[in-house]
Length: 317
Image (cartoon, rainbow, N blue to C red; front, side, top):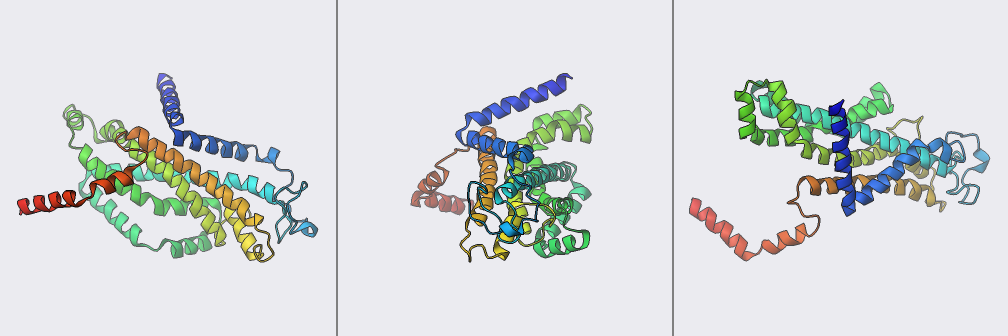
């Protein structure tokens, strides 16, 4: 019980640190707003977004009755579709991001700490997965196993864990030689105990940052797949809204709001997770400055710096 209490206290204190950061506060506010919209979607929607029987009302302009108008093909209320699309975007992004974090961390830690045949096999798998063209294989998988969001999440996880695993492995190769890990080994700690209690906490900052940024990337990827017609055709998502607007010729008929509405939703969700990720990076790695990094790097990359680099290379030769 005390362990669970300590975990909640740690999470609360960490959220307070994110809140104290200007970028993190912005991200948390937007993410919390989107989460509330997704949870209370049935109470916020004036119409049933899945009702396609209103074909006489298709292509209506924004009004008091329909705040964002209706779709040009089926007459569905765009505002209601936008609200329900929040559920798909957040759920796919969060579930996939957490799954990638778990799989990538576990395999990266195992490859870096155990080494040997385990490291060789896992890294060869990573090398193969990286060079596979993901879009054609995704099309093939969705056509064989269906276009449900379970399949889409599994596809994202299948191709998404490799980068994190390689990053974690490189960090573990340094951590495994530290004094406290060697002390744990000499005291008789098993490999599983050391990886769980010493290695994983040491790479947690990488995992947390990667998860926040991965969630944002997955939201864009899901919207892209739905726009290409590879998403679940029975569920409403922001990408599907864009696809319907494009196929119905919304821009041709001047109904730009059918594209702007889901576009703003995608932007806000991605923007919020990006802000949270940058805030977490600043908290866990205080040496990273939140602003001015590119300018400072350019300032130091002058001729004197390059001369020193070249001179040091000559000295080593």
